[in-house]
Length: 313
Image (cartoon, rainbow, N blue to C red; front, top):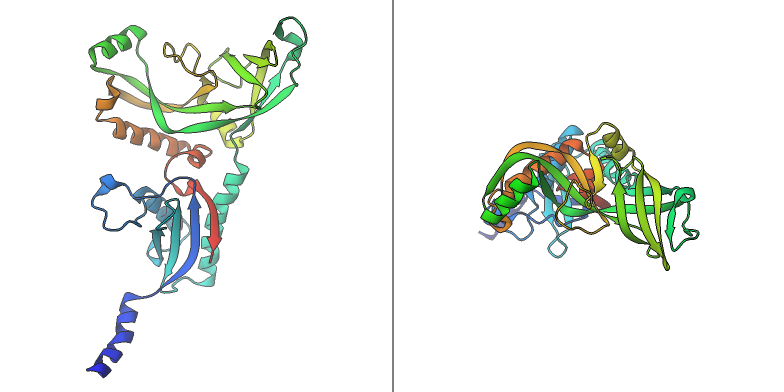
């Protein structure tokens, strides 16, 4: 009997296979599986959206998704362990796998939400009167909020009526990403006036520096070439949330709205806590963002573009 068990052991090992640790993938946000997807039989499942994104990228490289196994780290929910099944990949295929991940991380490093504010100090209005003391340009950046918001193309009166009655309101809906302008701490932003819907067009910025307030004409230049392309093609618009487009709700002066396109006519409920379509609308906006691609997919969503670092084992 003992000899029989020993003979069966190699057979069992060949059937179950052994997996080779290949890489540890570090992501910006949690890769934890979605509890809404069904019973969680393991605490180390990877979110289906991340899995499908990785599998799709593998297939595009001519690699078989079945050749790998993905498992979330037991302690760090931003980490995925990638293992190779049965040492099935050739050296060339392993090189392709490395190139895939390095392509993402290198593109992420080259991407940027940085921008430059070019100030026209010669035409600045300073209170009290004097020199603004501002540089000719200011380096800043935009930081994204993690979820989408909806802009409904209806009148203020219709919107307020729906809010009062806590009823649904129907109209064309645009997906909006909320971003916050980060500037040097010595400068305090107290107003931003966009003269056009395009943030790259001339505008006016009011800054407090020491005991003076300077209102200065400016132009904005974005570092990221993909973002500039989207803006030039009118796929995306950026404006201060405090502008008339997003009134009447008061918002911080450093908040900016990034419109990424329409998801058509939708019904929205003004009682947000009871909006049963919230997840569905978020998913529609996520699809819109995925269509636009980078640099937005580097900042939001659940795709391979959220990969920040790879450790090879």
